[in-house]
Amino acid sequence: MNHPLFPTRFAGGALVFGAVLALLGFFVRPVANDKSFTVDDILAIETASGVWVMSFRMLVFGLFVRLAGLVSLATFARAAGARAVVVPGVAISAAGLLVSAMVQGYYMDIALHGAWRFAQESSAQGREAILASWLPVDEWVSCLGRMGLMFLGLGSVVLGLGLRAEVPAVVGWGLVAVGFAGMMGIFALPGSADVQTASFVGLALAHGLLGTVLAMQQMDSARNASPA
Image (cartoon, rainbow, N blue to C red; front, side, top):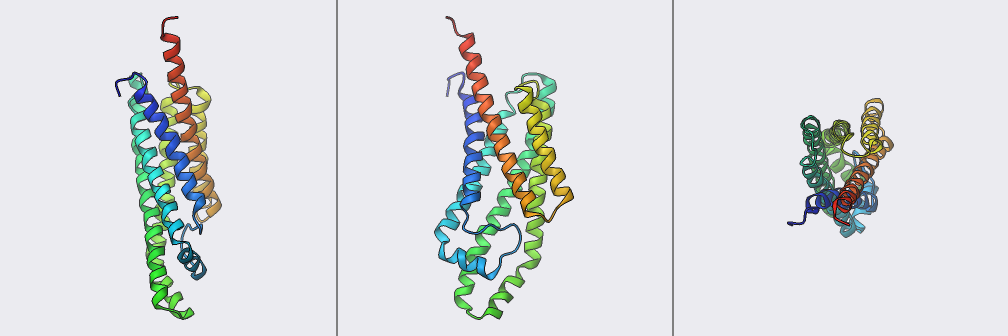
């Protein structure tokens, strides 16, 4: 840990690993869900409960690993003016990641609960009644999911602005563009699962790219500074 490049490698590695893990978990899910489950969804999850749990473990763990990378990243802004923007950007992004992790935890657990309830209730009407009883909470959690993505998008815009002089300009402005596009997409089409998926994937890829560039940039600087 005393190696001069360790902090940078940690931040960059956490951003990349967290992004990959979150995306892998997101796409491995046996059922894609962004609001309410159907009876068929619960039955499909019941037959692949092990994969369901593992996918959400990867997804939520990946979100928190990215959070660690972003918090570490806040220590690298050299100029005081940059830190004054980067730190709020990291704080807002961290709030978005935390909210998103809580939302994903709800979906993982409620689906398993539904599978258990379905084992006690075999009638179609009874199963529909079980799902209907979740609707108020489902609506609230769905709103939280959009809020988490909005926070993450806003934080990424602020973070990109703060880092534009610390990393290649295209990376900083790219992070701004992806965060802004995600926010505007959700504003315009708050009920669109495709928009939310695009925002989730786009922000994960942008953070992974930021981590890769940051680590490579610092390693290049260290090589250039070492005596020939």
